[in-house]
Image (cartoon, rainbow, N blue to C red; front, top):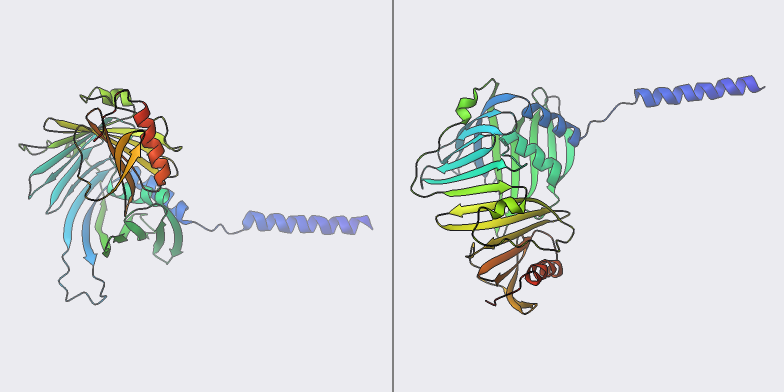
Length: 342
């Protein structure tokens, strides 16, 4: 009597094992993006970039939609050259510069002392989706279509990305912006994709000579950034669980500023400069450990500004509460022996 039961049990186990072994694997949006990221980071290609704002009225053919056409050459994840009618952007992997044709403004970003590096067009798209969005995947015979909803407080609330199944490269990105009264869809299409090799010389281009430009340096450690500025950088002792990810030093003329970037469940920025980076028009006046400060809430988050020893501090976050921002500010103030009100 035991043998039939044993055979029946073995049959069930075999069937279940077969189901487990041969169960069809359902690909996810994350799988597609990780494969696409690996592909674009390990190859060289050129592509035509077409971008425009999509009118709210779907019948937009007669609305005179202005299209911007550019051309990009990319090698791996961080070497690229992009040109359009407005600007030129070039990266050799450690230094990236941007030149605006109309204004003749130039920004040079030096990443040579940082783990963070410039990112090419497709690399940025895929990493942004993986890190900052909730994803949903639809498939067609020729495309992967990824619908993405932002997890962070950012002007781009949602995206739709079309990825070619054969090349694993994006064909089109629709980004929906919501900021103040601004509500629009920005579309970028990628056409005429060609895989080809590039000599590094095309990415080692000297930027145009200009009378005035801004230079930005990226560091991993505060002590390295300190050597570039003429004021003492103050690191907050309380950061609401956020970890320091990098330090940015900005130089223009004889002025400089520092940005400490922290990441956790929220983003946290601490700006430090002898002069305000920009003026706050409106805000709530508050007192933090005897120092007068200004607090405001805006579309991208919250901010506290105050002044210590002739240095202006701005503590900003996309999602930290007012109370936690004040605690960050208080930890900075408590480290200063001679606070001055402003």
